[in-house]
Length: 373
Ligand SMILES: *Cc1c(COP(=O)(O)O)cnc(C)c1O
Image 1 (cartoon, protein in one colour):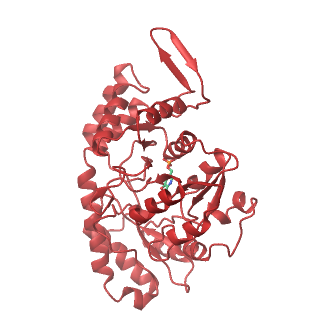
Image 2 (spheres, protein in one colour):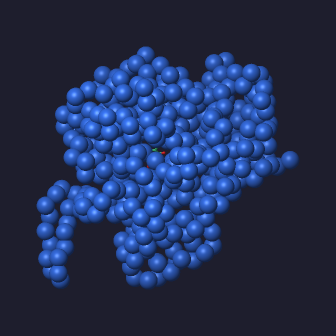
Image 3 (cartoon, protein in one colour):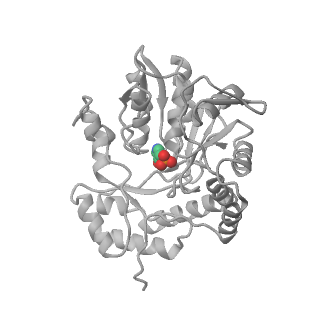
């Protein structure tokens, strides 16, 4: 039996990608250039020909979408309390007001009934998150958006290659934001991309990502909006191109590993332990993570410590955003979103990455059962 440490996530970069990055480093062109253009062209084709622009994070990608939508002070944006804090921070970043809607205890995604109940005359947008790569009910989401005239900025950071009833996430809808941070299903080390609706939005995205600059002719340069410094480098785009070539295999591997987790936990696991498995969806989800909600009788800290002693890495994604100090200081507090609060305290991410094999899943499941039984 092996005793090497099994992390909860680990990127795989092939030798061809490493060689391609070396070529870029030797080429004399490091920042945004032909590799960024090639990566954007491939992503656009993947998302059904919709315009796509890349950035240096998935966070700024969402912030820029909010700016393109003209959302700012006085506007409310509805989102989930269970996400990486970036999802809510971008709302504050543009000066708008975050409004949380509690999650569905089964999918752990934002509850669309509660979204509808949270809409006010000041609501301008919804930012849904597809936790672990499992989408929300996309038909219902866009029915609500169209009924109330709201923009949607999909935080699909975890959902590349996920789909909804046979349609790829990103190939339809309003703004769709993806992250290529190192732990995501494909990575550029750090980075992100935004799928947009038309050429005018794409042009604005280009301005916001680079100081608001427009260039014309040989020496024409003007700035008419306040942009920042959010462009992707050719080094990062080269990693992305190398990763993108494996996306179908990565997704198939993760779905196979997820099925293996379910098979090994078995039908009586929830009844025996009081832990809650994720939704067994092998069509729509890309299985970015395999997450359990722990039973009341063990704290997450104790669970993580015992798993660590068995050489199994455990992540937690995520603590409820509205209970973080920055949000408490804005009037949020305990008891406001009880399902998110319970899940935020008890959710754990088991090892799940494309270089894992069935024996790793067996090790992880054996460890979880020994700790919980
Ligand atoms: C990773 C992630 C982000 C942030 O992406 P970065 O590329 O790290 O800025 C935002 N939301 C969710 C749900 C994520 O998983």
